[in-house]
Structure formats: C-alpha cells, structure tokens
Length: 154
Image (tube, rainbow, N blue to C red; front, side):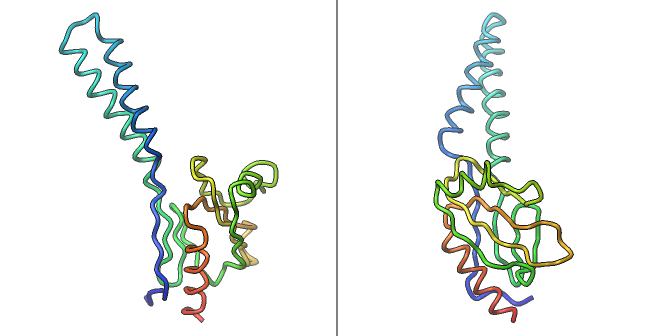
C-alpha cells in the first residue's frame, strides 16, 4: 500500500466540558448513595465518574484518516478514487447541511460540538450515498490530504 503524500489523521475528541459533566454524574451517584454510608458514597463517586467518562471517551474516540488510497472515517473505508469534489464548510454552512439540507442517504460522521465540516461528493455509480459529511476541526487539511491521495493513486 502506497502512503499518501499528505497523511492525515484526526481524532474527534469530546470537549473538555464533557469531562466536568462526567465528574458531576459521579457526584450525583454519590449523593444518591449517601444514606447508605461513606463507602457506598465513595463507590458511587468513583463508579459514576468512571462510567460517564467511558461513555464520553468512546463517543470521542472516532477518527478520520487518509491512509494510502483510502479515506477512513469512523467505521467507513472509502477509496479516494470513488470520491469527488470536497467542499469546506464553515460553522453556518455545516449547520445547514446537518439540518434542513441533509440527504437521508448521506454518510454522516457528525459531532455537533465540532462547528466546521467537510462535504465530499461520492462519484461511484454503484454507491447510493450522494456525499460524505465529516465533522472536522481542520477541513482545509483534510481536503488537501484527499487531493494529495487522489493524485498519488493516479
């Protein structure tokens, strides 16, 4: 497998506020278990915080990568030869494509806490997916990596 000229990898991590919320979930569990004593209170604090942190971490563990001649977005792996033009979207345009402009057949790697996105046309006639919507903090870099991978594969 040939590596792309401009490798790209991004992890769509959860925002910092979610970690505070995880701790507050643990505090809530601790308060629920307060009538049963100190040990259950500590268990609720640790267990509740850990459970909420696992949920936040797993939701924020999705990656977008350009590897060789493929775009890997979450669990989807698409050859760059099957992709067309990439459109960089600012926060307002990305919101529009997440809501009223969205096509139900599209592949959405959506993280609402990331305001910018990249919309990539799918040119494969066998694929019913019209486009990929990828939430990304660096849409310009991702678009450049896709172009470089397409040129390297050609």
